[in-house]
Image 1 (cartoon, rainbow, N blue to C red):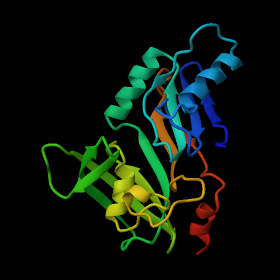
Image 2 (cartoon, rainbow, N blue to C red; image 1 turned 135 degrees about the vertical axis):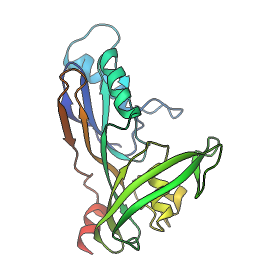
Image 3 (cartoon, rainbow, N blue to C red; image 1 turned 90 degrees about the vertical axis):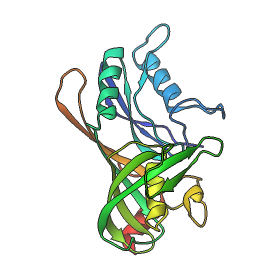
Image 4 (cartoon, one colour; image 1 turned 45 degrees about the horizontal axis):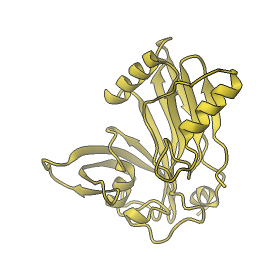
Length: 226
């Protein structure tokens, strides 16, 4: 059973949660409880709100990924946060555990991604294609050899961008069978975690920095000890 999300920030305009791996960000065909469902129920219970609860979805994480997710509690906040994501004004830091240390210490993966909706995977190309979107990911090695811990900072926000970038480095994320991992992880997650977000508060207009620690799973510690 997936553990419960953690509340990281809750005010009248923004709700920030740490999503457990395995929970969908929004409702999907599985019918499993989503982070959005959970958050609406929490607000209704916490504030004793009658009727429907509004929560604006301004970004999301893949189901097997853990970490920080922001929701907007008003339409104005949703509009302003969405604009920040669209304009790449939000600083996003992810941690990943990959099967082996990349060949360099740091770099930038730039590739053109084409989404296969039927298979829910992306194909990567080195040069521009009319039906593909540019994805740019800055990365650096932090610790370990095999497995290794890396930091990933997406400059763009394409589907499966970080997962594809790790594949392109020849260092797939642990558990990410779609993008080259050799075997699944026991909890069916992939070792990718949204660890830090820095954004401008949509009403107070001041910077907000939020952090979420990786899940208590053996593979996160293993990358630091080998």
